[in-house]
Image 1 (cartoon, one colour):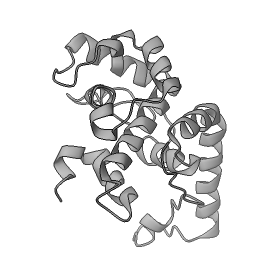
Image 2 (spheres, one colour):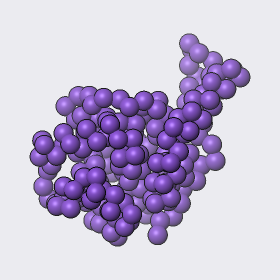
Image 3 (cartoon, helix red, strand yellow):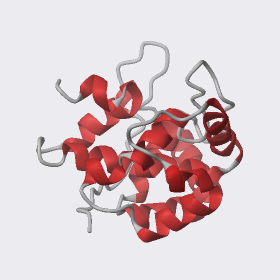
Image 4 (tube, one colour):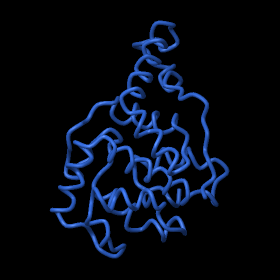
Length: 192
């Protein structure tokens, strides 16, 4: 159904190589980072494997987003956008991803994902792409993102696939654009 994006190993050291305070090329720092990756994966591997397979996204990409966004911690909702969970997304982003899936991706949400979201978030059955979520639904989604690791991974992986599909015909390497859009929003980066 989807083309698979594969990255062999997430490189958590390269981004910090120019840091003046810590030498991220040192063997002990590299080993500490690898151990952190392994421990985060060990705790979340069932959700990462399941949602990576459903959305055809390599596990290392999902793991990279988790390590970058939360460091593997269940971070409480913050700010007016209520950004929260392992993958640090907002309830509005979850709402938009599910409500506008068919419009953006061009096909239905995978049946396993639809069944899961319908079960965990029954309100998703009535998502309308032309409406905004109520505060009650945003609060429920924020609570699920914060307290339910699988929901956070499922939602974050859906956002990654949604963005990959949105950029797939426009770029030769859409993962770079996805990484930027994941943090700054699709509409803020789609024309840049």
